[in-house]
Length: 322
Ligand SMILES: C[S@@+](CC[C@H](N)C(=O)[O-])C[C@H]1O[C@@H](n2cnc3c(N)ncnc32)[C@H](O)[C@@H]1O
Image (cartoon, rainbow, N blue to C red; front, side, top):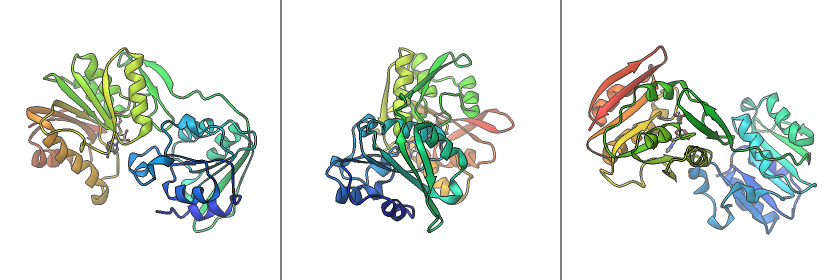
């Protein structure tokens, strides 16, 4: 499906290019094939990747390097934009056209592009969208993933540009880790981000799996596990559909953040339902969330008896037993 910025990106582009990279813009994949025989598509979110012909998807974003033209949707995170710029370096004639809705754009995006390209300017706005044009690549080295030791959790944490909260320990996650007492042999970190929860569970001796819908999370979790000499089985997937019924003793999660309006709640509530399916009888679901969200009530009705283990000004940590 085309995003409103996609026609603008196409109009800004030459009619043909030797090789085209498409980043996080699944709707542009087919249009790229009309302009080049060498099309390389990367999507961070597996749900976007699933919309694209498999033969067009790269196995790893390093394969994007060396294209003449790159198209992308500007990510919310400047770190993600920085990493995208690193991936596509290689051809001295490279042009990068990346766009978004104007209300989601800011000057810092031009600055990030300006570190990687000698020239950056903006298109006129159309359909409430704009495209940033960048050319004259600087060929900077790719520093991603970035690793950092975090003494508060006794782990080295890794992050790609699009990993939730980078290689830091999220405040809600910290509350969860301070109180986590997993019981059993097998554990799952649902929505693993940089893998701090998964690494803690593996360090505690549990056979640990982790899942995230974001490539940047999955690869960061792998790198975190490796940096700490731990084993974690990581999957790039949407929710828990890939896991068998009654297959884990423990699920620990800091679920996707949102404002709590009904429509946005649906994916998290579906995760709770699926957690009930995937947990063994007597299993534990540890969940931390913003205190204004009605998750405790939902956990009681969807999973089982739920106690509040800890609470601070912003976050509530619950433990639900199946
Ligand atoms: C609040 S972050 C927590 C990340 C990490 N566990 C931590 O504590 O820092 C939520 C994570 O859930 C992931 N996520 C969102 N929707 C998902 C889905 N449908 N399936 C799996 N993971 C999902 C996001 O990509 C993000 O990494």
